[in-house]
Image (cartoon, rainbow, N blue to C red; front, side):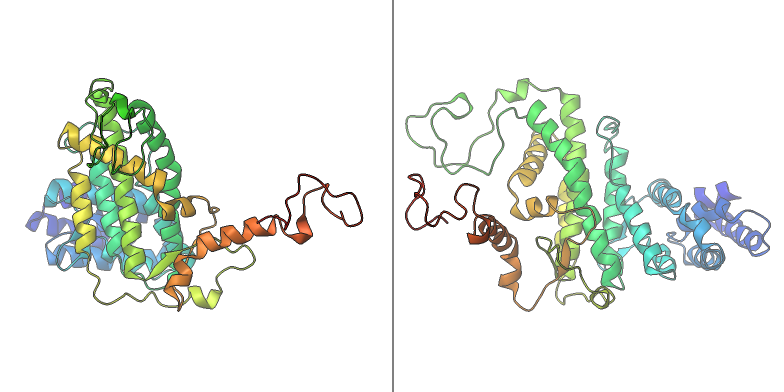
Length: 393
Protein backbone atom coordinates (compact mmCIF):
# COMPACT_ATOMS: atom_id res chain seq x y z
CA UNK A 1 0.00 0.00 0.00
CA UNK A 2 2.86 2.37 0.77
CA UNK A 3 4.38 1.69 -2.64
CA UNK A 4 1.08 2.26 -4.46
CA UNK A 5 0.41 5.47 -2.55
CA UNK A 6 3.84 6.96 -3.37
CA UNK A 7 4.08 5.85 -7.00
CA UNK A 8 1.01 7.50 -8.57
CA UNK A 9 -1.70 10.15 -8.26
CA UNK A 10 -5.00 8.49 -9.11
CA UNK A 11 -7.86 6.56 -7.54
CA UNK A 12 -5.52 3.72 -6.55
CA UNK A 13 -3.32 6.12 -4.63
CA UNK A 14 -6.37 7.64 -2.94
CA UNK A 15 -7.60 4.22 -1.86
CA UNK A 16 -4.11 3.34 -0.58
CA UNK A 17 -3.79 6.44 1.58
CA UNK A 18 -7.31 5.89 2.96
CA UNK A 19 -6.32 2.38 4.05
CA UNK A 20 -3.01 3.64 5.47
CA UNK A 21 -4.87 6.29 7.47
CA UNK A 22 -7.29 3.70 8.84
CA UNK A 23 -4.49 1.36 9.88
CA UNK A 24 -2.69 4.22 11.67
CA UNK A 25 -5.84 5.31 13.51
CA UNK A 26 -6.15 1.77 14.87
CA UNK A 27 -2.49 1.69 15.86
CA UNK A 28 -1.80 -1.50 13.91
CA UNK A 29 1.67 -0.46 12.69
CA UNK A 30 4.62 1.44 14.11
CA UNK A 31 4.03 5.18 13.46
CA UNK A 32 7.44 5.81 11.89
CA UNK A 33 6.73 3.33 9.10
CA UNK A 34 4.31 5.81 7.52
CA UNK A 35 6.25 9.06 8.07
CA UNK A 36 7.65 9.10 4.55
CA UNK A 37 4.38 8.42 2.75
CA UNK A 38 2.45 10.96 4.82
CA UNK A 39 4.96 13.78 4.28
CA UNK A 40 5.20 12.90 0.58
CA UNK A 41 1.47 12.78 -0.06
CA UNK A 42 0.93 16.07 1.75
CA UNK A 43 2.64 17.61 -1.28
CA UNK A 44 0.29 15.88 -3.74
CA UNK A 45 -1.49 17.99 -6.32
CA UNK A 46 -4.66 15.97 -5.67
CA UNK A 47 -6.45 17.81 -2.81
CA UNK A 48 -8.23 14.70 -1.47
CA UNK A 49 -4.96 12.76 -1.17
CA UNK A 50 -3.12 15.70 0.41
CA UNK A 51 -5.88 16.28 3.00
CA UNK A 52 -6.03 12.66 4.20
CA UNK A 53 -2.22 12.55 4.48
CA UNK A 54 -2.16 15.85 6.42
CA UNK A 55 -4.90 14.88 8.87
CA UNK A 56 -3.30 11.51 9.57
CA UNK A 57 0.14 13.04 9.95
CA UNK A 58 -1.13 15.69 12.38
CA UNK A 59 -2.80 13.05 14.53
CA UNK A 60 0.32 10.87 14.72
CA UNK A 61 2.65 13.84 15.35
CA UNK A 62 0.59 15.00 18.32
CA UNK A 63 0.83 11.50 19.84
CA UNK A 64 4.42 10.54 18.90
CA UNK A 65 6.23 13.86 18.56
CA UNK A 66 9.70 12.73 19.64
CA UNK A 67 9.54 9.59 17.52
CA UNK A 68 8.63 11.51 14.38
CA UNK A 69 11.45 13.98 14.91
CA UNK A 70 14.01 11.35 13.95
CA UNK A 71 12.10 10.39 10.80
CA UNK A 72 11.46 13.79 9.25
CA UNK A 73 14.71 14.16 7.31
CA UNK A 74 14.25 10.75 5.69
CA UNK A 75 10.61 11.63 5.00
CA UNK A 76 11.63 14.91 3.34
CA UNK A 77 14.02 12.99 1.10
CA UNK A 78 11.10 10.77 0.06
CA UNK A 79 8.95 13.84 -0.56
CA UNK A 80 11.65 15.17 -2.87
CA UNK A 81 11.65 11.92 -4.86
CA UNK A 82 7.84 11.96 -4.94
CA UNK A 83 7.79 15.46 -6.40
CA UNK A 84 10.54 14.68 -8.88
CA UNK A 85 9.37 11.28 -10.11
CA UNK A 86 5.60 11.26 -9.61
CA UNK A 87 4.44 14.86 -9.68
CA UNK A 88 7.10 15.77 -12.23
CA UNK A 89 8.25 19.02 -10.59
CA UNK A 90 11.33 18.92 -8.35
CA UNK A 91 11.01 22.55 -7.27
CA UNK A 92 10.50 23.05 -3.56
CA UNK A 93 7.77 25.66 -3.94
CA UNK A 94 4.99 26.81 -6.21
CA UNK A 95 5.53 30.09 -8.05
CA UNK A 96 3.33 33.17 -8.04
CA UNK A 97 2.15 33.00 -5.39
CA UNK A 98 5.25 31.51 -3.82
CA UNK A 99 4.18 28.72 -1.49
CA UNK A 100 6.42 26.09 0.07
CA UNK A 101 5.52 22.53 -0.85
CA UNK A 102 6.48 21.38 2.63
CA UNK A 103 4.25 24.05 4.22
CA UNK A 104 1.83 21.38 5.58
CA UNK A 105 4.74 19.61 7.27
CA UNK A 106 6.02 22.86 8.78
CA UNK A 107 2.53 23.76 10.01
CA UNK A 108 2.50 20.49 11.94
CA UNK A 109 6.04 21.01 13.25
CA UNK A 110 4.97 24.42 14.58
CA UNK A 111 2.59 22.62 16.95
CA UNK A 112 5.69 21.64 18.92
CA UNK A 113 7.79 23.95 21.07
CA UNK A 114 10.42 26.36 19.80
CA UNK A 115 13.33 24.03 20.55
CA UNK A 116 11.76 21.29 18.43
CA UNK A 117 11.24 23.72 15.55
CA UNK A 118 14.80 25.03 15.70
CA UNK A 119 16.22 21.51 15.59
CA UNK A 120 14.00 20.62 12.66
CA UNK A 121 15.06 23.72 10.70
CA UNK A 122 18.73 23.19 11.53
CA UNK A 123 18.59 19.60 10.29
CA UNK A 124 16.79 20.75 7.15
CA UNK A 125 19.54 23.28 6.40
CA UNK A 126 22.12 20.55 6.90
CA UNK A 127 20.60 18.48 4.08
CA UNK A 128 22.10 21.01 1.66
CA UNK A 129 25.53 20.45 3.20
CA UNK A 130 27.93 17.84 1.81
CA UNK A 131 31.39 16.35 1.93
CA UNK A 132 33.17 17.60 -1.17
CA UNK A 133 35.09 14.33 -1.53
CA UNK A 134 31.85 12.34 -1.58
CA UNK A 135 29.69 14.71 -3.63
CA UNK A 136 28.25 13.08 -6.76
CA UNK A 137 28.15 15.47 -9.72
CA UNK A 138 26.76 12.92 -12.17
CA UNK A 139 23.38 13.45 -13.71
CA UNK A 140 21.89 16.33 -15.65
CA UNK A 141 21.44 18.10 -13.35
CA UNK A 142 23.04 16.25 -10.41
CA UNK A 143 20.66 14.96 -7.77
CA UNK A 144 22.25 16.99 -4.99
CA UNK A 145 21.74 20.20 -6.95
CA UNK A 146 18.04 19.37 -7.36
CA UNK A 147 17.78 18.50 -3.67
CA UNK A 148 19.51 21.76 -2.71
CA UNK A 149 16.97 23.70 -4.76
CA UNK A 150 14.09 21.77 -3.17
CA UNK A 151 15.36 22.46 0.36
CA UNK A 152 16.33 26.11 -0.11
CA UNK A 153 13.05 27.04 -1.77
CA UNK A 154 11.16 25.52 1.13
CA UNK A 155 13.33 27.32 3.67
CA UNK A 156 12.84 30.61 1.85
CA UNK A 157 9.05 30.37 1.66
CA UNK A 158 8.19 28.83 5.03
CA UNK A 159 5.83 30.94 7.11
CA UNK A 160 7.97 31.59 10.21
CA UNK A 161 6.00 32.52 13.33
CA UNK A 162 8.71 33.87 15.64
CA UNK A 163 12.23 35.27 15.45
CA UNK A 164 13.29 32.52 17.87
CA UNK A 165 13.09 30.01 14.99
CA UNK A 166 14.04 32.29 12.13
CA UNK A 167 17.27 33.78 13.50
CA UNK A 168 18.99 30.46 14.36
CA UNK A 169 17.98 29.14 10.94
CA UNK A 170 19.70 32.05 9.21
CA UNK A 171 22.76 31.57 11.41
CA UNK A 172 22.88 27.87 10.50
CA UNK A 173 22.80 28.73 6.79
CA UNK A 174 25.72 31.11 7.30
CA UNK A 175 27.76 28.52 9.20
CA UNK A 176 27.26 25.88 6.48
CA UNK A 177 28.28 28.23 3.67
CA UNK A 178 31.23 29.47 5.71
CA UNK A 179 32.61 26.07 6.70
CA UNK A 180 31.96 23.98 3.59
CA UNK A 181 32.30 27.00 1.30
CA UNK A 182 35.84 27.62 2.50
CA UNK A 183 36.80 24.10 1.41
CA UNK A 184 35.10 24.56 -1.97
CA UNK A 185 36.66 27.99 -2.56
CA UNK A 186 40.11 26.64 -1.73
CA UNK A 187 39.66 23.79 -4.20
CA UNK A 188 38.50 26.26 -6.87
CA UNK A 189 41.51 28.49 -6.36
CA UNK A 190 43.85 25.50 -6.33
CA UNK A 191 42.47 23.40 -9.19
CA UNK A 192 40.67 25.86 -11.46
CA UNK A 193 42.09 29.35 -10.97
CA UNK A 194 45.63 29.12 -9.64
CA UNK A 195 45.90 32.92 -9.78
CA UNK A 196 44.30 34.86 -6.91
CA UNK A 197 40.67 35.66 -7.50
CA UNK A 198 39.48 39.11 -6.61
CA UNK A 199 36.89 41.67 -7.63
CA UNK A 200 36.48 42.48 -11.32
CA UNK A 201 39.35 44.67 -12.52
CA UNK A 202 38.66 48.00 -14.18
CA UNK A 203 42.20 48.20 -15.49
CA UNK A 204 44.49 45.29 -16.16
CA UNK A 205 47.97 46.03 -14.78
CA UNK A 206 51.02 44.97 -16.74
CA UNK A 207 52.00 41.36 -16.40
CA UNK A 208 48.63 40.10 -15.16
CA UNK A 209 47.73 36.60 -16.37
CA UNK A 210 50.92 36.50 -18.40
CA UNK A 211 49.86 39.44 -20.57
CA UNK A 212 51.72 42.71 -20.83
CA UNK A 213 49.63 45.43 -22.46
CA UNK A 214 51.18 48.62 -23.71
CA UNK A 215 48.30 50.68 -22.29
CA UNK A 216 45.83 50.06 -19.41
CA UNK A 217 42.85 47.96 -20.45
CA UNK A 218 39.55 49.78 -19.77
CA UNK A 219 37.58 46.53 -19.69
CA UNK A 220 37.18 43.90 -16.93
CA UNK A 221 39.92 41.30 -16.69
CA UNK A 222 39.29 38.70 -19.42
CA UNK A 223 39.29 35.03 -18.59
CA UNK A 224 42.62 33.74 -19.83
CA UNK A 225 42.59 30.94 -22.36
CA UNK A 226 45.52 29.26 -20.62
CA UNK A 227 43.67 27.96 -17.54
CA UNK A 228 41.02 26.40 -19.76
CA UNK A 229 43.48 23.63 -20.61
CA UNK A 230 44.81 23.06 -17.08
CA UNK A 231 41.85 21.67 -15.17
CA UNK A 232 39.99 18.40 -15.30
CA UNK A 233 36.44 18.74 -16.65
CA UNK A 234 35.08 16.35 -14.02
CA UNK A 235 36.69 18.46 -11.30
CA UNK A 236 35.21 21.62 -12.78
CA UNK A 237 31.74 20.06 -12.84
CA UNK A 238 32.10 18.86 -9.26
CA UNK A 239 33.18 22.27 -7.97
CA UNK A 240 30.49 24.09 -9.97
CA UNK A 241 27.86 21.76 -8.47
CA UNK A 242 29.20 22.41 -4.98
CA UNK A 243 29.35 26.17 -5.53
CA UNK A 244 25.83 26.33 -6.97
CA UNK A 245 24.38 24.28 -4.08
CA UNK A 246 25.91 26.53 -1.44
CA UNK A 247 25.03 29.64 -3.42
CA UNK A 248 21.35 28.67 -3.33
CA UNK A 249 21.52 28.31 0.45
CA UNK A 250 23.15 31.73 0.64
CA UNK A 251 20.41 33.18 -1.58
CA UNK A 252 17.75 31.75 0.76
CA UNK A 253 19.51 33.33 3.71
CA UNK A 254 19.70 36.68 1.93
CA UNK A 255 16.04 36.52 0.96
CA UNK A 256 14.94 35.79 4.53
CA UNK A 257 17.03 38.63 5.94
CA UNK A 258 15.58 41.05 3.43
CA UNK A 259 12.02 39.78 3.87
CA UNK A 260 12.06 39.97 7.68
CA UNK A 261 14.42 42.97 7.89
CA UNK A 262 17.16 41.17 9.81
CA UNK A 263 20.76 42.34 9.70
CA UNK A 264 24.01 40.70 10.70
CA UNK A 265 26.55 42.45 12.83
CA UNK A 266 29.57 41.65 14.94
CA UNK A 267 28.66 39.81 18.09
CA UNK A 268 28.53 41.77 21.32
CA UNK A 269 29.88 39.26 23.76
CA UNK A 270 28.62 41.20 26.79
CA UNK A 271 24.98 40.72 25.89
CA UNK A 272 22.68 38.36 24.05
CA UNK A 273 19.30 39.01 22.51
CA UNK A 274 16.66 39.11 25.20
CA UNK A 275 14.14 36.29 25.31
CA UNK A 276 11.33 38.78 24.83
CA UNK A 277 13.01 39.96 21.62
CA UNK A 278 13.29 36.42 20.25
CA UNK A 279 9.68 35.68 21.09
CA UNK A 280 8.47 38.54 18.94
CA UNK A 281 6.54 37.52 15.83
CA UNK A 282 8.48 37.36 12.57
CA UNK A 283 6.95 40.22 10.60
CA UNK A 284 7.36 40.35 6.84
CA UNK A 285 8.29 43.60 5.17
CA UNK A 286 5.66 44.80 2.69
CA UNK A 287 6.49 44.96 -0.99
CA UNK A 288 9.09 42.17 -0.99
CA UNK A 289 8.18 39.25 -3.22
CA UNK A 290 10.10 36.10 -3.99
CA UNK A 291 10.84 37.07 -7.59
CA UNK A 292 14.46 38.03 -6.98
CA UNK A 293 15.18 34.86 -5.03
CA UNK A 294 13.45 32.68 -7.62
CA UNK A 295 15.51 34.22 -10.42
CA UNK A 296 18.72 33.68 -8.45
CA UNK A 297 17.85 30.00 -7.98
CA UNK A 298 17.18 29.68 -11.71
CA UNK A 299 20.58 31.17 -12.52
CA UNK A 300 22.31 28.73 -10.18
CA UNK A 301 20.50 25.78 -11.74
CA UNK A 302 21.89 26.79 -15.13
CA UNK A 303 25.47 26.84 -13.82
CA UNK A 304 26.27 23.49 -15.45
CA UNK A 305 24.90 24.39 -18.88
CA UNK A 306 28.35 24.91 -20.40
CA UNK A 307 32.01 25.00 -19.49
CA UNK A 308 31.94 28.77 -19.50
CA UNK A 309 28.94 28.79 -17.14
CA UNK A 310 30.73 26.44 -14.75
CA UNK A 311 33.81 28.65 -14.77
CA UNK A 312 31.69 31.72 -14.11
CA UNK A 313 29.96 29.99 -11.18
CA UNK A 314 33.26 28.93 -9.64
CA UNK A 315 34.74 32.40 -10.07
CA UNK A 316 31.64 34.06 -8.63
CA UNK A 317 31.54 31.80 -5.57
CA UNK A 318 35.24 32.12 -4.84
CA UNK A 319 34.99 35.88 -5.15
CA UNK A 320 32.03 35.92 -2.75
CA UNK A 321 34.02 34.23 -0.02
CA UNK A 322 37.09 36.36 -0.75
CA UNK A 323 35.71 39.89 -0.83
CA UNK A 324 32.16 40.00 0.53
CA UNK A 325 32.45 42.10 3.70
CA UNK A 326 29.15 40.91 5.15
CA UNK A 327 30.09 37.30 4.57
CA UNK A 328 33.50 37.74 6.20
CA UNK A 329 31.86 39.25 9.28
CA UNK A 330 29.45 36.33 9.48
CA UNK A 331 32.28 33.83 9.10
CA UNK A 332 34.15 35.26 12.11
CA UNK A 333 31.28 34.74 14.53
CA UNK A 334 30.98 31.80 16.87
CA UNK A 335 28.74 28.79 16.47
CA UNK A 336 26.03 29.86 18.87
CA UNK A 337 23.90 31.45 16.16
CA UNK A 338 23.64 34.90 17.80
CA UNK A 339 25.07 36.67 14.76
CA UNK A 340 21.78 38.09 13.58
CA UNK A 341 19.49 40.60 15.18
CA UNK A 342 16.47 42.62 14.30
CA UNK A 343 17.28 45.85 12.54
CA UNK A 344 17.22 48.73 14.98
CA UNK A 345 15.89 52.21 14.51
CA UNK A 346 19.03 53.47 12.79
CA UNK A 347 19.87 51.53 9.63
CA UNK A 348 23.14 53.34 9.16
CA UNK A 349 24.38 52.55 12.65
CA UNK A 350 23.63 48.87 12.20
CA UNK A 351 25.31 48.60 8.84
CA UNK A 352 28.41 50.33 10.16
CA UNK A 353 28.49 48.21 13.28
CA UNK A 354 31.13 45.63 12.31
CA UNK A 355 33.77 48.14 11.29
CA UNK A 356 33.04 50.44 14.22
CA UNK A 357 33.40 47.61 16.69
CA UNK A 358 36.64 46.44 15.12
CA UNK A 359 38.14 49.95 15.39
CA UNK A 360 37.04 50.13 19.02
CA UNK A 361 38.69 46.81 19.75
CA UNK A 362 41.87 47.97 18.08
CA UNK A 363 41.88 51.19 20.03
CA UNK A 364 41.28 49.47 23.35
CA UNK A 365 44.34 47.31 22.75
CA UNK A 366 46.60 50.35 22.47
CA UNK A 367 44.91 52.74 24.90
CA UNK A 368 46.40 54.42 27.97
CA UNK A 369 45.48 51.58 30.31
CA UNK A 370 46.95 48.88 28.07
CA UNK A 371 50.25 50.26 26.88
CA UNK A 372 52.87 47.81 25.66
CA UNK A 373 55.43 46.65 28.18
CA UNK A 374 58.38 48.95 28.37
CA UNK A 375 56.27 52.06 27.87
CA UNK A 376 54.01 51.63 30.87
CA UNK A 377 54.85 53.99 33.70
CA UNK A 378 57.54 55.79 31.72
CA UNK A 379 56.97 59.08 33.57
CA UNK A 380 60.19 60.24 35.25
CA UNK A 381 62.32 57.81 33.27
CA UNK A 382 64.48 58.34 30.25
CA UNK A 383 62.15 58.70 27.26
CA UNK A 384 62.38 56.13 24.55
CA UNK A 385 63.80 57.40 21.29
CA UNK A 386 61.46 55.15 19.34
CA UNK A 387 58.25 56.57 20.79
CA UNK A 388 56.80 59.25 18.48
CA UNK A 389 55.74 62.57 19.92
CA UNK A 390 52.05 62.75 20.65
CA UNK A 391 51.57 58.97 21.11
CA UNK A 392 50.02 56.75 18.45
CA UNK A 393 46.65 55.97 16.96
